[in-house]
Amino acid sequence: MGPTMKDLGIDQLSPEQQIALALEIWESLGNCRPSAELSAEQRAELVRRDAELDVNPSLALTWEQIRTSVETAR
Image (cartoon, rainbow, N blue to C red; front, side, top):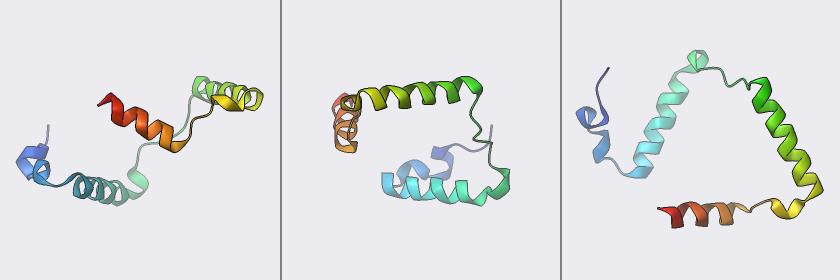
């Protein structure tokens, strides 16, 4: 394995700096990025969930609800 976050001092960066660095690294990959193709099963699940939300829109969560849920789980 290559160098770790600690080896490179990345663990000393703020979360915002770490995210910016991760995005810069991702963008530097250009066409070498892994494929984001969905499998047939994943595609079918998205279609199923979309149809479920069409029938019952109250199942949808707002971004604030999701964020609060994640922050409370910490």
